[in-house]
Image 1: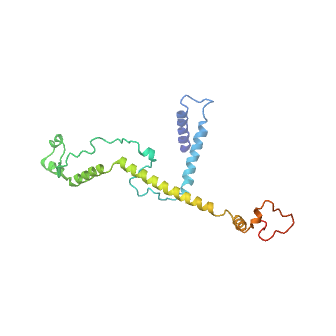
Image 2 (image 1 turned 45 degrees about the vertical axis):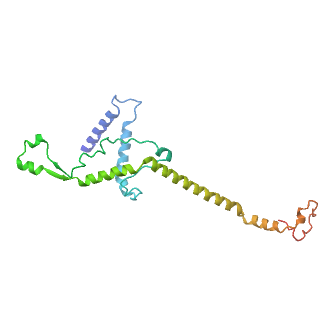
Image 3 (image 1 turned 30 degrees about the vertical axis):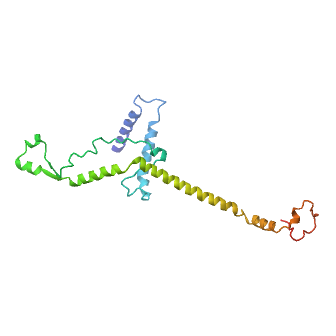
Length: 215
């Protein structure tokens, strides 16, 4: 009984949300919509777990840096990522260690022992080394130059593919299309020169002399 009351209560709430201006003939049948969605949800819960999909690893499974692919025409467009201008600035490049402490307003409320416990000395040698390597790499790698190299590689690959296609086409033209065509060419080579004489016309029913086989 309580379940029925709760269900009907939420049903009225759903009707009020779907039809805030009241019931009308032009509105959808809210009870049907809610019941259908409820049945669908119950069906998914009851039967959906029985047919769990097979988990497969795609080609991007272990790849942390996935780069989207572009065509050569789209790849040459300039991209302006939303990165701050100060992202490549190193303010501590001449320092090996940095002392970290709370703000002065916070330090005034701490005891000497608490101040000592919250102070931290950070070694930034690795940070400076990584920053210098990134700067060097950014100077050596030119996006336009790299794209030009990719374009040349694409043209070379297209040229090799065209040569392979042309060679395959020539081979197809030289090989007979079927066995009967090959036999016709062989028999045509054995035909006597008399067959090319326009005055030569054997009567029907006569046996062809040797070298004039029918084909």
